[in-house]
Length: 238
Image (cartoon, rainbow, N blue to C red):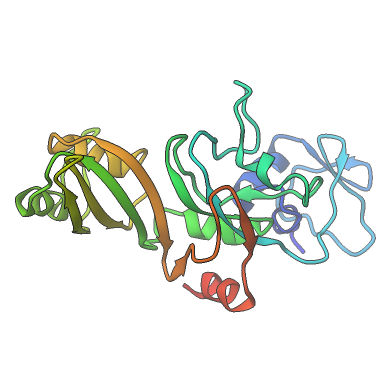
């Protein structure tokens, strides 16, 4: 197995990032630093990254989490904030899990975590157009005119968003809050929030409820479960 694939299969990072580890001279095989990406690793070889031994997991782990707000989607945080890894650490204290994509600190909902670096890299690649579904609480009454602007695409950070689906779920006259479902295929930073900002609306609550055909059913806020074999197969073939 090529060294970059081996490292990705170990759950270290995406295959591309693992290539950089090799090029940076951080990887050794049987005690010898290697920088050739064509290096093959066989059974019984000792592979270390930055001096630490890495091994292929017996089986990849695939989890679906209902991320709570007030939690960052990173492996660690230099500001000491709670991370999604803190939620799973009791059951996976030494497993090299990492999140597929990101959810903002104040956004909650569906998040996938896995040890499968190749799958993570493919799902988060710009060429992947998996539809992500969000429900948003928006201040004020959102009209069809507003939604048509979002559907056609709005400019955020100097770039036009792609056409998307946006549907009004309801409007609460007492709280003056609109509930909207938005389905996007991009992954721009804070995209849904900025889309509404572009039409003069403020999102007070945002939750991802769908990732392709995956849904959060049966997963409470701050909890997670293993993906079923069918769900894993779907992600590998989406």
